[in-house]
Amino acid sequence: MRLDRRLIVALDVPDATLATSIAKAVRRSVDAIKVNWPLVLAGGIQVVRDFADLAYVLCDFKIADIPNTSRLIVEQAVRAGASGVICHGFAGEDSVRACVEAAGKADVFVVTELSHPGGREYTAKLAEEFARLAVRAGAAGIIAPATRPDRVKALRSIVGRSLILAPGVGAQGGKAADAIRAGADAVIVGRAIYDAKEPARAAEEIAAEIRSSLR
Ligand code: O7M
Image 1 (cartoon, rainbow, N blue to C red):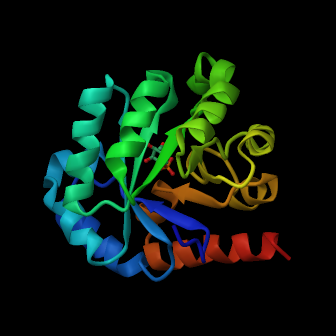
Image 2 (spheres, helix red, strand yellow; image 1 turned 180 degrees about the vertical axis):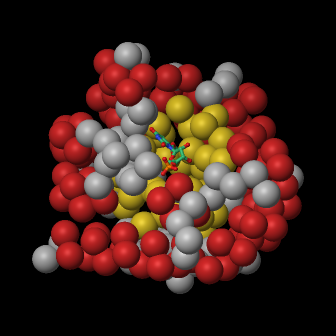
């Protein structure tokens, strides 16, 4: 995964036409487009095919099933054009390994600690284990909470040079610069971009914040 901007847009827009116009507007300001259930349920798997012509598509299906079903999901995502897929660590090492094997050249990212307040209830307790599992299973990286930069820092010390993608910037209260300084390779941003009056400008502003945090 090439991370020039260190910014990934989460297009959680349940309308394929609107999502496509936002994708086209922001694609030069971001490194990837993350597609989640709201958009795929509204627009079908065709949205992944369409976006794959524009950008790196990261299919965030948060796969958390038995290995066989996980494999089948990953195969469909990759066949549709996904360059990366996201699975949960809590499904266990066999399931994560099934995702990595099925992904082939595509990247797999493993969710560790979820960014919302409820993420502290259960996922935080095992986040370090999930991070170790991700490395062992050969995943490209992990997902860690931009809402808690201290946790990004702690998880970085476990995953070494594996990638860390951090959601929770903007609407959830996290700051892009803080997550990057804590060790994230890129931030994932949804509402602060797609709900903005001018999504391209909003994305550019976040990219500028990231650049200045690196100086
Ligand atoms: O910026 P937002 O809050 O509008 O959207 C954040 C996106 O990141 C949205 O698509 C979430 O599903 C996703 N996300 C989290 O917000 N928190 C997490 O802990 C994990 C994810 C995620 O992307 O997991 C892969």
